[in-house]
Image 1: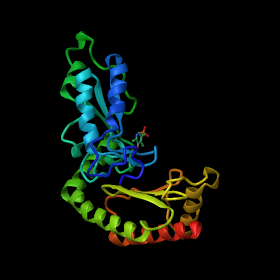
Image 2: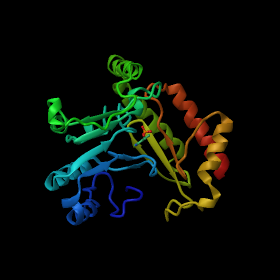
Image 3: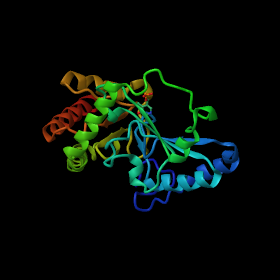
Image 4: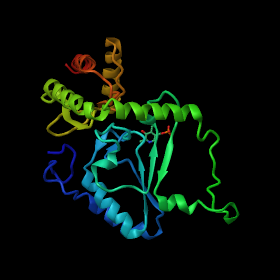
Length: 268
Ligand SMILES: *Cc1c(COP(=O)(O)O)cnc(C)c1O
C-alpha cells in the first residue's frame, strides 16, 4: 500500500485516480493557461514525495488537449538521480521545456540549461530584422568554465558507465534501509526512486499520525547524526538520502549505520 495514497492503492493497482483533480482544474482553467510546471516523479522540498510515470503520461495528453506547454523542472531529478538520465525518461513522453542544473556540473561550477523543443526554439529564431529573438538575456550565459565542467560531467557519466552502476548501488541502499528501519515503530514508509531514498517518520505508523511539529524530531535526528559525522538534511520529519552517484558501498554502509544510530538514539 502506498502510505499516503487517499485512494488506498499500492504500486501495482495505482491507475492515478488522483489525476481527476488535474482534469477538473484543466476543465476550469486550461483554456486560459499558458504552461504547467512540474517536478517530474519527485516533489523535492515538498517532502520527497514520489508519484508514478503514468501521471506524467496522462498530464502530457491533457496538456496537449488544452494547448498548454508542459515544463519539467528536472533540476533535482536530472542526470541520473532517478536511475535514468532524466525523470521523464521513465515515461516515454517528453516535456516542451526542461530546466536543468545541479547534476549538470555536479555543483563544481554554477551552470543551468533551459532546453526546449525545436518548435519553441524556432519561434525565437530568425533574421535579426524579424525582431523575434528572445531578448531576455542572461548576464553570465555560456560561461566557458561552466560549460567545460558540464562537458566533463557528461563525459564521466558516459565513459564510466555511471548510470548502470547506480542500479546496483540503489538495490544495495534499499536493502540496507529496509532491513534496518522498515519495521521500526516510527517509520511510516521508505520510498525510493533511483538512488534517492526517503524515510517518513511518524508518531504512529498505523494511524499515520505525524509527530508534534514542536518536537522537531527530524532536526533532533539531524543534530545527532552530525555528532556522529553524517550530514542529513531532513525536510520536517522526512529523512532522505540523495547521495552522489559515485558513492561506494562502504560509504553507504557508514551513512546508513550512522543514520540508524541517530534515529534510534532520538526515538528510543
Ligand atoms: C535546487 C532546485 C531549484 C532551484 O534551482 P536554482 O538554480 O537554485 O534556481 C529548482 N527546482 C528544483 C526541483 C530544485 O531542486
